[in-house]
Image 1: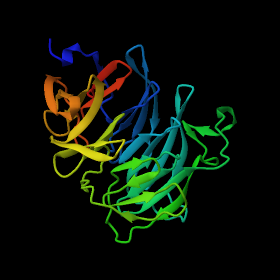
Image 2: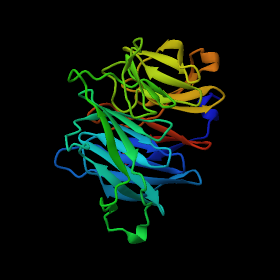
Image 3: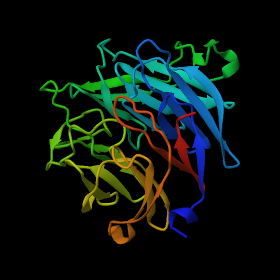
Image 4: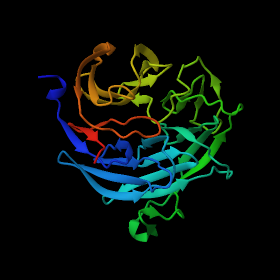
Length: 328
């Protein structure tokens, strides 16, 4: 029996328009449909229950393709993209959009927000395509949501009580000179060639050695974070494994660009390539960070192509691994 066959893998069909999928830490998953001119877009809510993947909600999604998305520490989902920040919460098995930010505190356009990271003190750090850096924070004395008290239309809560706001902007000195986020250490964020300490209100760029983050690889997922290390795409098809304790590069590995990667136990990781072997999943052994592909398995799925890449979705919740076919 192959190594992959020993894993608890279940195949699931998804609606054919889903182009983005994120499994949250508490038994739900979010799917967002492709952007197609002249067509409605949707955001799907799935519940993972008894090893099943159940669709429980479908809402219209306003905006273009999300260029990044994260689950915040308070179990809020944030998607960012062109002129938009959308915050969602799951309450009573339903998805609610609680805050929508389309302009910064000076009512200036956000342009395309490409990157987002949450740091230890709860601040959210963003960077747009122009290289501008923003700080977003939860509003002080924010009154927590009580569904019975709110004006709700088709799953979108009235924006009279937003939970988050822009608090600071660091304009880029040279337009279109973005320097990608590499990683965060507590309240310090390391960009490509500088770092900023966001623990106080005096934000200064401090020059550091070049991180060599690939400036053309900022869409959705080119940075994968695990318990003890970060897998970060450098130039071309070279990844760095960065130790999270000392924030030093342990090793570099050469690998075609990864689309999805999940930890399955015993120093092993399931992954799919972005634009290669689209119907296969691979098993990677990283014992002592000695990179070795030990198994692969083909799935005869027809994956729909979106603007950026072919999608092969894999995800894990507790001990159940899901491989998704979006041809339903």
